[in-house]
Length: 406
Image (cartoon, rainbow, N blue to C red; front, side):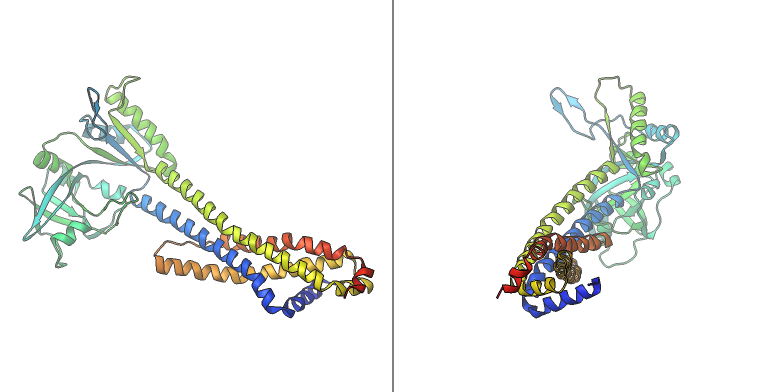
């Protein structure tokens, strides 16, 4: 008997008890659908996390001023005053894998526009900062290097202060805001980025030239941080090591002494987040796969019942020339057909479930072709694996005893 004929026989056998076949397939349907949906949730969470990290900057490293120790008290990062503009120039000149650097310092001030005011972070930086952070402008442009060198009173607004200082939706470009009683001209507004992976509002900032902040607002001559963009993601580790060595020399830090700075590599953060998300995806997929195993046990149970019910039929087939191999193949194919039909319906169920999760829960869900194909192949393998024992039992029946079976 050829394969097509065996499939026809299998379908006829399964349609004799439609409800039983449907209930048997239900375990496979739920299992395949659950695997696709859960793996999609895990992959979506990973992509969303990676997108949030990528939004923080291109191949980004953050050089922070370090901690300071007074007696037994350690102040934490940001307390030293040794990170200076000269360090920025040295990194650009002496670290070949660095593409751009932007100085950074900050303070918190009340910003006033006509009758509106908003307490926000005032970030002193340079025009290259917006390129490093991959941050596009909604209106206007960035301030210029000339503004930095001349300590000009110009400002770029994030989306949060823009909404609170200009609630009527009017364009702020060219208008004056006041920071610590000093007038600043708004030259640009940034497109919103939303919350960072740490839950911080990335849009709640006003950006001005760092020299203006140092000389007119804070009075400090040191920097809080440097935003550094490496030429590629692969070169961030090299850049981190070379920057560390350079600052050791510039800050005269001897071996064994604590650093007065810290170099944070966001590529490492992305790798850690990706690894954690991958583990979560595997965990979700594994939990969902349990229902597939339950469905496979259901197939084996029904196939054993089918063997008992069709014992006389098996005897007749053997009597007219069917071999043990033919009988075994017939029952394995019946189990495979059950699992395959359930797998196809399960794929549709998984796609619908993924869409509902995304639409109702507003979670990021990414259903890949690999997860669909993997779930389908797994369901087919389940059918073959759990169908083998009933098929073997059917093939081992004594034809004479089978013919006598009532």
